[in-house]
Length: 181
Image (cartoon, rainbow, N blue to C red; front, side, top):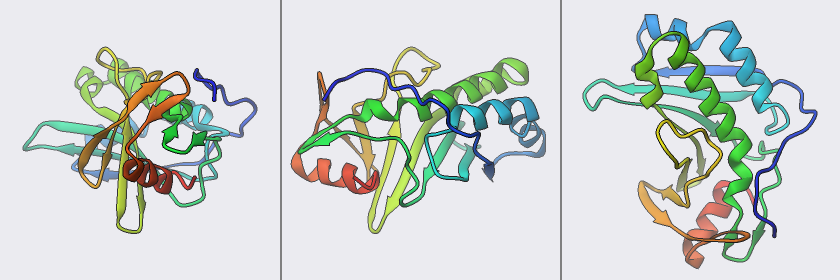
């Protein structure tokens, strides 16, 4: 396996469905902005089978927000490479970059506080849930996928290697299940 950034070429823009949790009317308007949604739709093109379900959440008690793509079963169109316990999480970068760019666009044009929202991919398969995030200087731009995956609410960190992230066998199986590998 080779590491590095994957570029998705020639994908059709995806229909984007926004799902709200704890988001007020004003901010729903910000996140629904046509220019930002179009850019997100184009950015996600070729990465998924439609539609793209985007969950925009804010916890008013904890002051934590997130923008996450919910990965439905058998909808990932990106080839994520796996060799045993080595998973090329970096292959998810095009999706995470599109989400980060969307978040940054909204923050720059409407409300700078939105820049603090995390971005990620969430997946639920049977009794296994995974959240794939980004790392880097805040606000992270999605180019570097976090080697720690939230598996059933617990951070499970793998060891980055040239071709991906090496996980404990049990965690590698859970990650593979969440990504339909």
